[in-house]
Image (cartoon, rainbow, N blue to C red; front, side, top):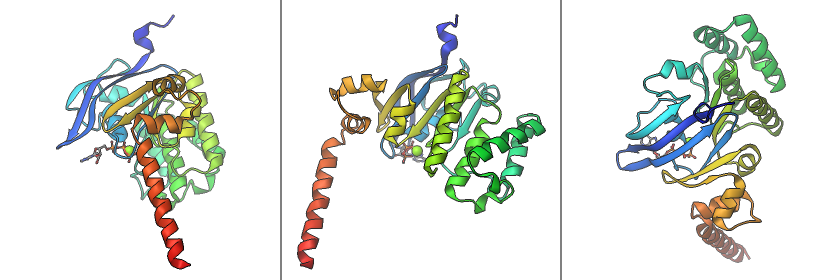
Length: 271
Ligand SMILES: Nc1ncnc2c1ncn2[C@@H]1O[C@H](COP(=O)(O)OP(=O)(O)OP(=O)(O)O)[C@@H](O)[C@H]1O
Ligand SMILES: [Mg+2]
């Protein structure tokens, strides 16, 4: 049987990161367990990307503690990175390369078998209908196709943990379906996922647990059912729960009213 400690893939305890007076991450704590899909949901500027970058050791925390596989991202960066796959918010940085060069480069730095990796990459490219772009310069690819390359680049070394910042942004419906399947297979094999998203349906469908983050604080955490209980919105969809927890539900009503009002007055002017 697995011990409790072993099953904890990510431990975050009282984590803080400020940018001058912006409290981007303001004292958050959560765990992610083996085989779990954990979603970070929050409005623009809530602190999702900052949290994910802290997990990767790309930013230095102001306070608190992070453990990934029981290790410290700053001290054990290399060991952790060999077991983690990352999809960043910004498109791929290697814009002047082709996907082929990029994957070969990754295979060499990660010391993967080149032939085997190429075979795997081609399978993924085919399933995502992107094989035609294998030898095209990345800079010339469409947003969605760049995103596909980033996703493939994050999984070819079969990491135990995927850290994905809005992984499905820009993907068409069919590709979304395929990526969901890839994530399912990853967790069936015991892998874990933490990802940020704005797509409520996706969070609802994919996540075992969700943390709702607002202005650097976690304002709700748990399964979708538990979040509904927290907000007394038992019959609700995740969107309603989200707007309640981030205290945006009333302001949405106001904004909609204003839009309607200005629309009506414009129609009147035209008449
Ligand atoms: N390098 C930086 N320098 C200064 N401020 C930053 C920096 N990175 C992030 N911030 C600020 O920290 C806060 C959190 O930003 P973050 O990118 O983590 O939000 P997010 O939840 O990922 O938002 P989005 O949904 O728009 O991607 C914002 O107020 C942002 O302006
Ligand atoms: Mg972000």
